[in-house]
Figure 1 (tube, rainbow, N blue to C red):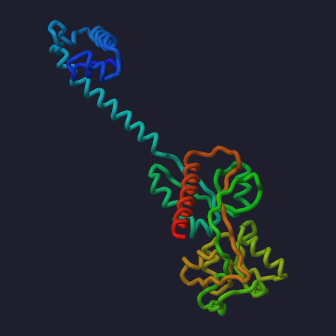
Figure 2: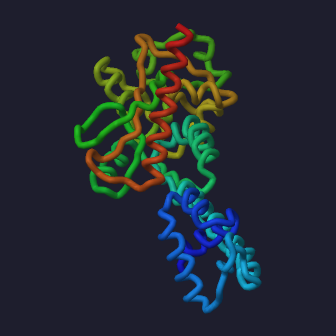
Figure 3: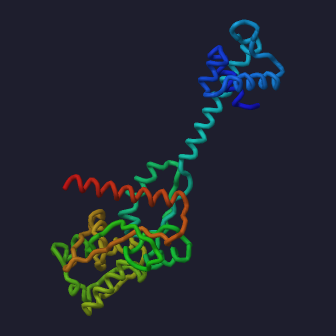
Amino acid sequence: MDLRKLEIFTAVARSGSFSAAAQQLHMAQPAVSIAVRKLEESLGITLFDRSGRTIALTAEGEALVGRAQSILLQVEELEASAGDLRGLLRGELSIACPSMLATYFLPDLLSGFLAQHPGLTASVTQAGTTQIEEMLLRDEIELGVTSAQGTPELERLPLVIEQMVVCVGENHPWSRRRSLKIDDLHEAPMVVYESGYFIRAQLDQLCHAASVEPELRVQSNFLPLLVRMVKQGMGVTVGLQTLAEQEPGIVGIPLSPRAEVPMALARRRGRTISRANQAFLDWLVGQKTAALAAGARQS
C-alpha cells in the first residue's frame, strides 16, 4: 500500500475538504482527488460520500481513518528510531599505547569519550613506541600513542608533554633532593624499561651524551614490576611526572636541565580509519580546542 495515499486520505478526512487538504499538503487539488480515488480503487471501498455540497466520510471511511492514522504514526516512530540508530555510534575504539601513559593518562581520556558514546567499547594494546610506529606503518593498527616527532608517514596529534623525572622510593636517600643531574645516575642501581620505549630512549641519549653508565639491574616492560622494585629500594627508574603524582610511595625528582617527553596520537597518513577511531580522534581535537579557548579567556 502507498503510504503517501494514506497520508493524503487522512489529511482530507481531517480538513473535510479536498481543497483544504491540497493547501496543507502543498499539492494541486486534482492530484489530491486522484490519489484518494486510487486508494478507494485499490481497497475496493468508497471512503467519502461526495453527493452533498460537502464531502463526508462513509462508514468504511470512518473505520479506516483511525487505522490509517495509527499506521502513519508507527511509520514516523520507526523513522525516528532509525535516525537515532544512525546517530548512535557503535563498534570498538582500538588503540595501542605505552604502559605508563595507558596506566596514568589514558583512563581519564577513555572514560570521558566513552561516556558520550555508550554504544562503543574500547580495546587498548600495550606496546613500546617503536613497536607502535611499526604496527601503524604495517597497517596492523589504526591509532597509537607514540612520540611527538618522527617519520613523516605518520600524522600526529599532540597529546601531552610530560616532564621526565627520576622516580625513587619515599625512603631513598635522594627522596628530599629538589633536582638531579644526569651525572648522579652514574653507577646508580636502576630498574628501567626495555629498549623500544621512548622514555628509555630518552634516558639512553642523556646518559650517552654525558658518558654516564647506570647499573641496570632490571629491564622490563612490565610497569607494576618496576614500580614495586622502586618502592622496595631495589633501584630507581625514570618516569613521567604523572607516575610520581599518582603512585603512593614514589617521589619524582626533576632532572636538571629539565627533560620533557612529548607524546602524540598517531595514525598512518592518508589512511581511512574506522568510524569509532575517527570519532575518538575528532573528540580529542575538540577537547584540545576547548582547552585552548578556555586558556585564552583566562588570559
